[in-house]
Length: 363
Image 1: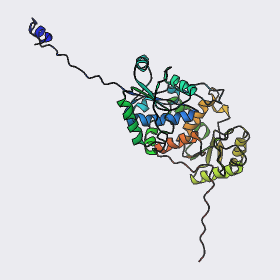
Image 2 (image 1 turned 180 degrees about the vertical axis):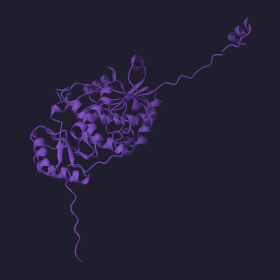
Image 3 (image 1 turned 90 degrees about the vertical axis):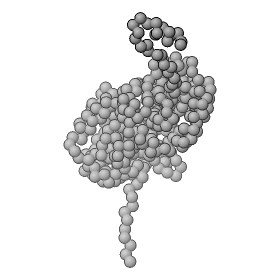
Image 4 (image 1 turned 120 degrees about the vertical axis):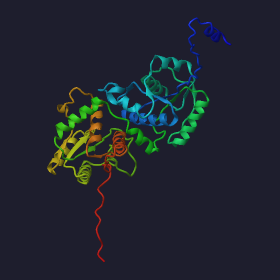
């Protein structure tokens, strides 16, 4: 027999020896999310990254931080745990944060950059995950892909031996709404944010009367403008939704949802600084209990920066009875998906007028 066997037979105690068994080491494979742009682009990117990771069987490396919007000079980066609940995400698919062992593996293992991203955004996204060295080998996963096509692409990466695939996930599987809605069930905000939102709701709207959250998203840039259309996010006189029309649309959504209480989220903005007070006064005149904490720090937001306030307002809009979004807003889209994943109603966007009243024609 072998040397191990001879030593066992010669053992004075005659006890059975443990036979060493060969174990096949399974190399864990990782998806590295390259999250860029504003906070809600990062949140939507995280959702798509979760979906892709589960689809292709890779462990998702979570970002350690989320960046504030580049125009937000008053907010700091937020730690992942201050924004979302990691434990709930792990019930959906395999997730972890980068540690020293993963960093060593990153430096020595095959890796692929699967998305075009400029050097500055790439470096920032990798740094937020925990890496400082970009992959040299490049591939390409198309935007607006079907799940089956993404799975096929990752089979090729695995065949090529890539332990890490770095992907900018935003808009990769954005058409797979059923898969994204399932992932959104597990994208739960942190206990800190949930507690603040619940406290705010109870402070502003005690009792059980129905509440509608209206997201009034005014932007300074024209990225949301479309020729011949009017959107709340568009700041130009020809392309925006005027305050008077916005008021009528909010009242219509409140009536549809049977809500006597209205919360204005994200109210105000460059060129629209007086709009919140105008809307609140007009809604009160029409018999509604209308509030906003977007610009009023006295409601308990004194210690929060604008990034935090936005997170709390999103959670508030996710848990109330109804939500009226602003079209073409990633902030609204985040809330719409949160609510859809949990079976909560969403109203028509505030950019769309009330449905015309149907009249019967006389014979």
